[in-house]
Image (tube, rainbow, N blue to C red; front, side, top):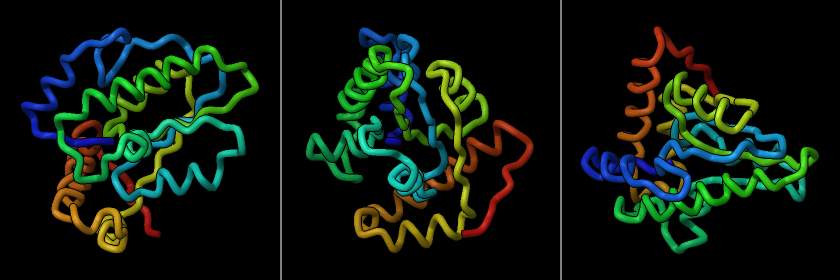
Amino acid sequence: MIRFPAASYAAVHKSLNQYGDAVQPELPRPGCTVMLVCGPPCAGKSHYVREHACEGDTVIDLDEIAKEQGFGRDRSADIAGQLLHDRNQRLAALALKPPSHVAWVIIAAPSRQLREWWRNRLNARVTLLVPSREVLLERAAADPERRGTLPLQRKLIEQWFDRELNSRSEVHERGR
């Protein structure tokens, strides 16, 4: 999931497209099974999906959408709306998939309320991956794609935990 400065976030969050709010869009109900995989940056969400998805499954991941459009992890906040619009189009297209199809949706969703919102919107099964901060920071430092944005990655990890902790009394961190 992309993070951007508060002013940019507010502008994108208020931006509307054919699905409504770009960040929390009004979407048609998916016709297929949706597996929602959530957690902080470096939690292993993409790895988890690669390990569990079957050939032919749909995977919707904002980072992969950004890569398809030529953007890396150091992408500008200015393109967030474009990426969210593309993601929302893909999410809306799940309404046309048969019940036997499986779609995997990767999103940070840094609060119980936000995960519940997405679960309800997509009628999804939720998997939450929350390694310890130490493990997340080690993974960020070891990931060649993230090394150039290490200060940002640290900030995003801390923001995820801050938002998560504000949404409930505690998060139980687990090791590797």
